[in-house]
Length: 146
Image 1 (cartoon, rainbow, N blue to C red):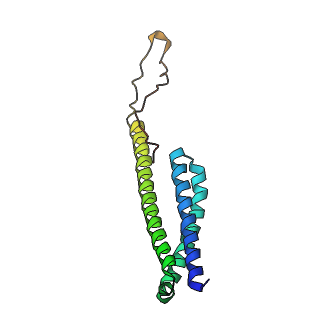
Image 2: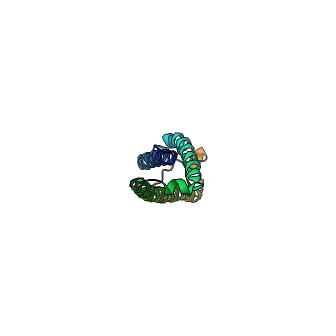
Image 3: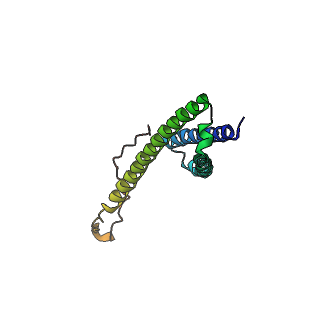
């Protein structure tokens, strides 16, 4: 195996690991397992940094890439396209999740701001009446298919 083939193998391994992390991340968002998401972010960040470093090294040696066998170059191109599609889909899901979370926060904020104090009155000669606890229904829909 040549040095270029070794670099390509490392790059492909990193792309596959990142794709697996993104698939896991999508599942965690779908299941709303937010605590595990924080742990996964550190792994994703570390893999992304390693991927960027390897990609930069490979791009600095275009002659090495050109010297790869046709099968290796074709594999690298196909895997890169699949990786880019996965990254785009992951970014879309993250934006979608962000919109959902922001919408939930907005609805909760609006519902809290919409509460009006009830006028307190007197009940007969015994004094002021205590306000009973008031329950409110907040309409909300969550799409868990993200």
